[in-house]
Length: 206
Image: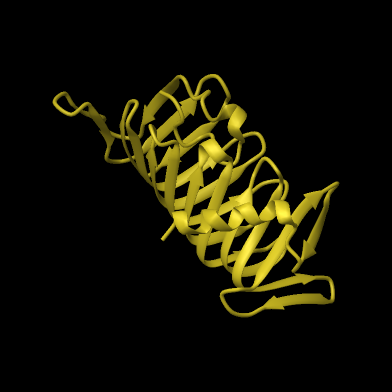
């Protein structure tokens, strides 16, 4: 199976490498021979046998080459940890939608949003609805994260705190650019021209 949930936050290099996985159902495993849909009503674990990635869900439903749906999602890898209330991944489109996402990696700690969209082919994640992070200390209406470029763009009203300094923006036109470099966060309300391309991604998530 290609492009399950696991390429999220791992970059384009892994986006097409989810070739095989093993299934460890918590309870019964139901297979609909007519539709090809497998359901784990009591949840279970999907393990990527090639990359050592682990997806756990309290409910999982999937069809090979088509989709994966899960509730009570927890994903663990060597570098990333994230949880979501629910997830629906469209495998052919290489995109996944989440409700109640919490994510952490080397750049973000406790990054939360009511809903999110991962665009695997573009290495971009869009987060909306009460977006906030513990580190860096950020609150925003919308956040677009470029995983490969290690930069992010907040759109709309935001509050960013670093030490005693606070940056705030109000209104739909407000922008905050974040770049992660050498263990530091470079924040600016002046968006580099190269980062303006991230604005268009916000419309992909209603």
